[in-house]
Image (cartoon, rainbow, N blue to C red):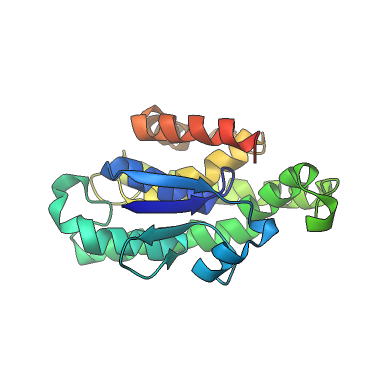
Length: 222
């Protein structure tokens, strides 16, 4: 049995939830208020961050990229065309590069600051809650066009997907982080036609629709 500790507006959690849904893996989901620093959760991940995947009989698997690698190692070879980390070594490098670009750099510069500031108003004062810093939000928004332009250049060469000929972790990571910012109204869409088409394709997937629906309902309670 898989158990995922997540937060509804955590882009790393969203990435993993999308991957689990695309793979059709049954999972018990536990929404975690990380600022409460529950002892039971810190035992699973001393860093105190989501997501964390717990597999019966195995050590806890913390962090989006580590979970993605774990899922590929355990389930990938049996998934055929549905595998989210391609078999081709060159494509695997590219997928990992783009996963890192969004899960680390985009998060540090854009989705992390936006989420932290937008969500502060819902957090207790003693846990860092308060009024959003709109200057930090503006600074994060100003960096988004660079990422959209690069995605556009990839899609113009590769047509439907960011790497190779099918859906990969790269698409899920990019879509997860963009969707968190878009939900907050912070994506300055301009003439990014190829990106908009790709993003609409991602949004139309049943996994994407069901997970986002759960996230936005859950965000009001968490």
